Amino acid sequence: MKKTFLMLALALPLFCTAQQRPPMRSSEPVEMPDTHDPVVAKCGDTYYLFSTGFGISVMSSQDLKLWKREKPVFSEAPAWAVEALPGFRGHIWAPDIIRHDGQWYLFYSCSAFAKNTSLIGVAVNKTLDPSSPDFEWRDMGLVLRSVPNRDMWNAIDPNVVVDEQGTPWMNFGSFWEGIKMVKLDADMTRLAEPQEWYSLSRRPRKPTEADTDPGSGAVEAPFIFRRGDYYYLFVSFDYCCRGAESDYKVAVGRSKSVTGPYLDREGTDMVQNGGEVVVAGNERFPGVGHCSVYRFEEKDYLFFHAYDMNDHGRSKLLVREIRWDDQGWPTVEL
Image (cartoon, rainbow, N blue to C red):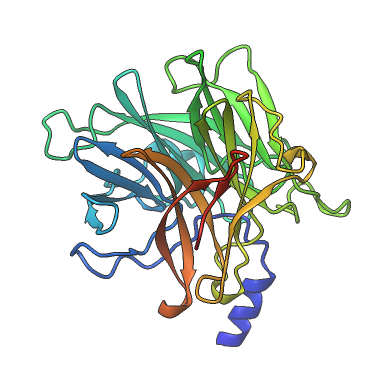
């Protein structure tokens, strides 16, 4: 039975980065906690990590090393998502956190496994400190949805960036025809009208693959980080969620415009299968990916999850400092 399950799991096109996972095994602060799809923000003197989980998992840290579990964002599944997504019970995928105009915005995704029946929503809060009297997550509902047989993209893995003119943009996507970008309205809770869309990264699909099939174009989990004159688009290539068989890796391209084109070191457009690999797996961590990038205390960090073969392939949080070479490309040691 176990062998049959493993063979089935390896045969599935595991396009989503947000598999259900066991909860953290300790309420005490731990290093390398069980985590999937981490994003981080600093509020006061505390770092808060948001990740895939029931109600959106939350952890806190004072030093980016020891992490303590906090209450999830939602105590129950958002009613609008339950209504819109048959079978949804509150396991929320791949959040993104950003502060804009004095308020925190937490974007998140809900999806049917291996389908692009997917939704991106957003919740807002004045603070991330749960001890503050101003702490209250208010769910603002749907921002974007994808529909099978209508859309060749998947509305999961949102990341929001504000450009130098103060315009917010949401990039997102997983498999199908890759990573998309759409302009948001100034209130950050809906699409701007008239709508403005771009393709940022794509990997080839086989001509025989149906529109409803995630396909073989294995790219997902975008994150845009601005440094100097460039916007850097980080994405994850290949497959997560397979333990020792995972071959997830992080790749990057850069552009002087937030809307692209994003080119790799060789000048290849990421829409044309370009991408400079930043970090790939090793024997202990065969698959590493779904990253976020931040500058804290004058240092740049890559936050990502990795499948740890020292702990039965469980998905663990890794935090690594980014070094930049003399041509302005990021490098990370695993």
